[in-house]
Length: 529
Image 1: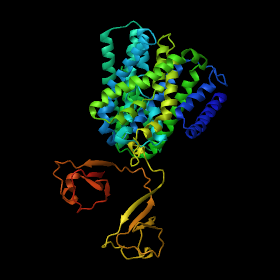
Image 2: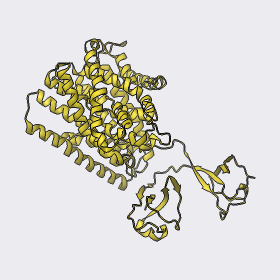
Image 3: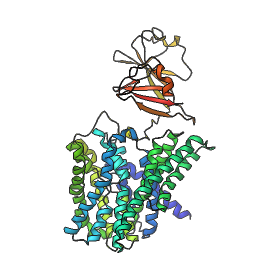
Image 4: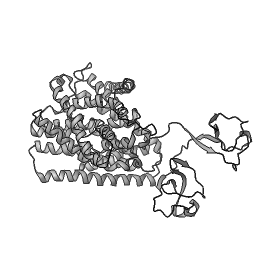
């Protein structure tokens, strides 16, 4: 028992170290985990023979639950909503088009069997959420036109379509070509997956709002159970568990959950561990000695997929939306293949497919992560799709400041009680400190003798709020037809039923009072009562 545990801990430590090395070399982190797994595998240095594909499928499927759930949990819906229609079109019709074109290439060019061609196209038709999330965050790719959110939602939601196509292809390969059965398979996957995912999310949210966890950490344990249930329950009745887990994550991640910051940090660690496990295990089950005989068809499929199939699907689906050529090219290039494709390939082995689908798909995924993943920042730069004024981390709900201090700015008006007083003359609340003073473009580090003047901007520091008490913030946009336009906040307080703590107006942040008048397109940040 001790030796396997020691080996497992050693592998995790190596994965963490490889992460730092891969970042310095510019190699995607997940590719480093795969290569490390190959190093430990039967053809590597440590010669660990691992050929239990049933066990590998179970472990990888379990890991994907948390990757999919946290992919949804980290999706900021306010950023994703404007691109949701395009993303969902890519994750459904885009996957089907990519699968069909790839299947035709495998059949007509590589001379694969028709059903094997269909299986191959289906297995590698989706993009990988873990790979896309990892590169966007680690490289801090701030992209124009909501492209980061588009890639995020697409990659997080397209595995279910690929799974359905793969399941249909395997059904045909088993000689069970019943159109009714396939139609019901697709119906049950979509409908049960969506309905149960939404129901589980709302039930879990209700418990979060109305149940007080007696011990710290139990809320995280509860959320782990919710993620597993969101996958297992739909899967048990024929629904798509990955779709359900993703939807559950989106709903809970965009809810005002208590103690959310701690939950985010917890799931950051869990998801990182799952990514290590899944990609290391996939490298472990691969046999590099078999690569020479499949490298040419794998490279051909990777090239066709990257340069023809996905670009054709993306151009066909995004052009009607008026997307720029640069955005379409970047989205086309960013279609990374990853863990889901290899897991679906393992499924084909466990369903008795004798063709060397697994190693071809494995090679395609490795090429995709190493080449496409490494070059995404350069391609984005070349296409001038980098937005220096954006922050990709704000497209995720898990963006939080790691510092336990909060900084706010305060502008001094002529009537402010602090005007024309030195800091030592001001009765400051405990644990509050003025750390910077901005005056006529000059930065002044103040002391007790510093006198505050009209038009000064003070930067005030205070400890961050650290408590389990629920503060539920929500946003409300003032539409053009709103009767509140021109009204003072004090006049509509009872209708709002909430405290307006901030207004975002034309790129500016306003801390309001009762006399503040609302304008069209104001975004109100409310503290729900």
